[in-house]
Image (cartoon, rainbow, N blue to C red; front, side, top):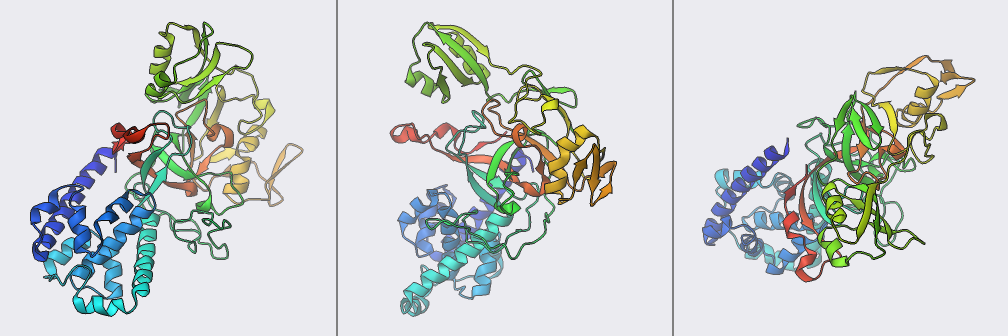
Length: 475
């Protein structure tokens, strides 16, 4: 499902949801026109489900909002006489489609906000139990939605600037590439790998399920923005590794080379995304830069060179580089590029003979499931971690220039998984595949679809919310 297709899906989804709400409002004696007004329609929905109007504010809290929606859906069904736990569970998981089915085929009758008087009177005897039941239902339903359908994600670092900003809140689809069956299914709800407050592991490791992905709508394509588990955290189960977000520069079967910071895939130049950034050396007449101007240009990364008044390192888009160059106090601006043959020990695969760095890297081949490679010394260094760790062959070793697997000499190796190459749009301030190599298929979480909220910590008042970024698609 591409982005236009997703928007079409959302429009159809909303129309169907509005239809069911329209009918339910009529049955509940609420003016039906209120069901088709976005945002406003939440307030009669809250009332119909037996919840106070101020619950609306809980919907804007990341992580909490999914629980709230589930509790509201449960309240709606109870308001129309559905009290059976099994029915409530399946209706909630399938909402809002279940609401349409309910309206069209079940001839529902409104029994009161949150349920009939008899039901509410019975529940008053055990109010705490009602809340426990609601929380358990919400936790189970929301966890299943998070596992298999969609998940909220926050941009914590500047590695994707300015395509994605620190403080952007995204929705990530699990359906596009196919959801993974949870590999560590017993875990505390909504805690990724660490328990809140008390810390410690939020999951148990004695029950693990082998990697299996349910077929999705599409395959990862070049330049998709993808959320994945950080591959280097070997001490955690795959699905509990830290979540990262980058652009997928190369897919299985591609060859990549970076020359003087320019990326080539299969010998074709890959343009930097329009909002991507590079690092620049900027020299002024000795003066600095107006903070308000930098904030308006969304320039957030500026480093003053010690002992050199008027000299700065700035991370800029092409557009901002032109604007900075035109400032009266700027004498010089030029990109900072690491030279060829300059070995960077922090760059994958950390092999001095290759002499790779972030601006001059490769060539390197991105393995595809079933591909067979010759086990040369260079290939061993490039793919050693892939074969040992990701494909679970810990006995792989190199002795006297000969490669052994399970104490047997091997001349080639056949890959068991697809692999991907991820890079941040902020090319000179991104910890990505240039630092840690390939991303295996079993580490792929989902496709970033759109920004639903964007929070500027440096803004003031209402300007803390970046209105122009709300519900923006991710390209």
